[in-house]
Length: 359
Ligand SMILES: *Cc1c(COP(=O)(O)O)cnc(C)c1O
Image 1 (cartoon, protein in one colour):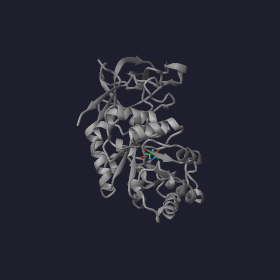
Image 2 (cartoon, rainbow, N blue to C red):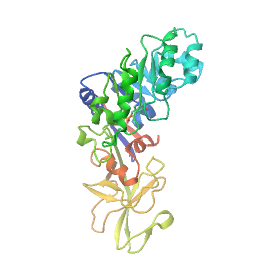
Image 3 (cartoon, rainbow, N blue to C red):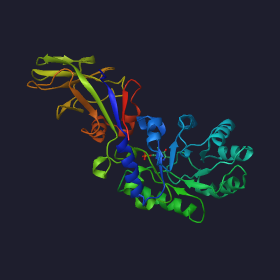
Image 4 (cartoon, helix red, strand yellow):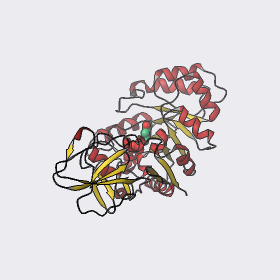
């Protein structure tokens, strides 16, 4: 019997892609599948998104894995290449690359690639992490455009730092800066992430990039994916593997950090930090069981989580629990733990059996 499993709803993934694309007036939409498609499985997700205009990943190894699986959708390397060999691989597999730093400009112009490649220039409009400074854009653009390694027109992208903060003017200013640098130039322009798509219509430009929303999750706190018209793609299930009678004042688990006030029943769930559930999840973090939410008590251990079932429960060993997903929104769980949904899905370990609902 499989205990810990991640059910991945591929029809919901496709529906979310199509919904988000409509949100952008049916303009081309990039599906971000970095980090094993946010923990959902990069090959399965990329294959299911056969209608996607483009896929995007962070590392070249991720892109090679997608191509080797026989998927021919255009792929963008969000941080580009770091050595000559990577650029040759990009040319061979037809990857589109980002250039975000002067060293990548120098590398690009010094090489003689067997085949020209498509390039996106990353501009720093306020994130101040990677990207070319607006003052340096002009000279960098000229250098890249002169290179015979460039296929077609240079494209432009940038990234938001605060698009999930709906009352911040940072995003408005980033859009302004991006527009100022790029408006006189041909080539595609892209700045919106999921929060941009859903909350900042002025940010859509030619092509938006969706990661978290594609998986049915809200990019902003205080909303659920459902409220935004999305459907949860991942549901994490496991089972009760023990139920024990617990007396008043008895502790439970490592460090004995929790003691019962009164007699109750403790349920033990087959899931733990060895599956990717945060060890620091505090007392009270909810888990769905038989139509209600039960609170975590005691410390999350590697393979098990303990919950307070209440003294008059009629749960049975083997009953299914949901740690997050279609019945318990991941946004609620992330908030209780003090993290964001991205971290929960991406940290799931290999031990959690992936089960795909096919399209
Ligand atoms: C990860 C990433 C995205 C997707 O962000 P979401 O918030 O998940 O939609 C978009 N663009 C870049 C450059 C990224 O690194």
